[in-house]
Amino acid sequence: MSHVMALVIDNLILQQAGETLQVGLTDDDRVELAASAETGYEVRAVPSPGVQVEELLQLLNAIVLSDELVIDAASTSSWADVGHFFAPLNFAQILAAKPFSEVRSEWLPLRKYAEEALCFSPKLSADFAQFRANWKPGVNDPVLSTLMWGTAATIARSQYLKTPYLSHPTRSRLIDRSRLAPHRENAQEIVQRFVTTERVKLFDRVTAGQKTRATTLSLPPLGLEVIAECSDRSQLIHTAIQIREKYRHLREWIGEYQRALEASPAEAANKMATHEAAANDIERLFTGSWWSKLSINFGMGLTDLLPSVPVAAIIQRALPGSIRSAVSKLIQRPWEEATLERLFVLLGTDSPKLRTHALRHLQGA
Image (tube, rainbow, N blue to C red; front, side, top):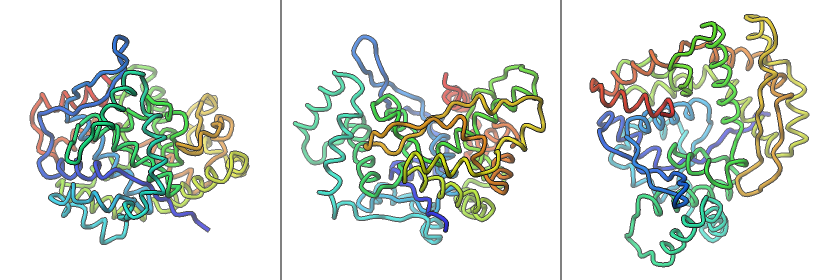
């Protein structure tokens, strides 16, 4: 019996991805929180184009690999102006709006825990505590309200539903700096990172170790496949829905993987160990085993704080035959930059400045 692969996602993803679909890449900045040796944390301005590409590809990838995307019903008004782009998701019953406000008392304690865990420096903790103490309705701080409070609230809702959380890229980087980082992965993220890691290794082998800027990109390959099949950006969401059937077995397997993760570390290990080696299809291309060098940890949940389980020895036997074939094809997809250029065309971006901002961000520069 397959396990439904649901993800709680930020309404912020739909809001900003919808705006990108409507107007293309924009010449402005987003704010993010970064560590600072002097003050403990700093607010950093990040050019929007790279984040826009991230969030759009993230959404397309999630549409293909998730059975259900759970959103907060009370916040859907934030993307009402661009809601027509997501009408196909509603029609296909992929978007599921939940009335979290009706059960606020159930997840509020989890939010309070997440708020403290997100504070990666004493000064951030102090500033956020002061913000909460002085907050009044209608006050919307892009950092302490949208980033800190918004992230903590969605983490809490995902934990209340016992459903993995797919965070907006900016919020994801905040989580990565926090105490929640070692415990945040879900099955989809593990498979995604696995594919990305092996694509870089494959590219390095093919090019005999000659480094290019492409080796630093790590974009969701399913999002890239959607882009490759579109001639207009208005087709992106609809196309992502269309190719879901192609990856149905992979989506079902990820759901089963998630169920095993949620059950217990032992069950996850036992389940994964019963499958055929995932490496066989790729290892034929090269001499020697290079998948065995993988080092991946996964946790059981954001607030459970259970010990993470090393799966480096398990991942080679993680994927059954039909799924192994799908993952192998994803690993061997043409490299990202050509498709990324196609996305720039779809988004109507002929500005070298905006393209440069996007590439630098995606390369981690």
